[in-house]
Image 1 (cartoon, rainbow, N blue to C red):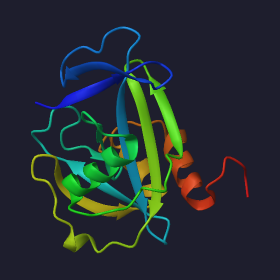
Image 2 (image 1 turned 45 degrees about the vertical axis):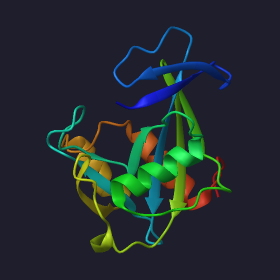
Image 3 (image 1 turned 135 degrees about the horizontal axis):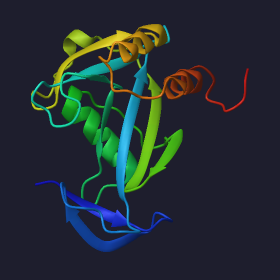
Image 4 (image 1 turned 90 degrees about the vertical axis):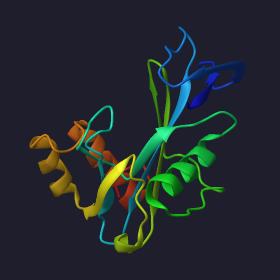
Length: 172
């Protein structure tokens, strides 16, 4: 079973570990990461979750996501998730998350990068991913409307595409 480190609200790792599926104790948090890979055409690489996957089966999602396991920092978790789910090696050693979303049980660090990828060469993790494809913002928003994509708020999808184009919170 997957084991997670726990953190304070200030992201200080404490000497407490839980197993995936356990309740996160009150006032403690675990670390989640998402990686959104875009190409030069401003399309995001998206994945379709396996039909037997717990939580959002058959739904499309951003490139990858998952929880950090014991001993990992955010970048290490993001690189591992991309390698596991897509068979793709990326280097995030000098990269910071573009957004961190705090939620009731954790922190979600979101990385955005641009990389040209031949998706026919990806090695999909059978337990997690059944398909991948490149999709523009309109296609993703349409998929959300059709309930084929995890129901993120449309503003979040717009924000991800904005951050890819500008790497800024400001309009350019």
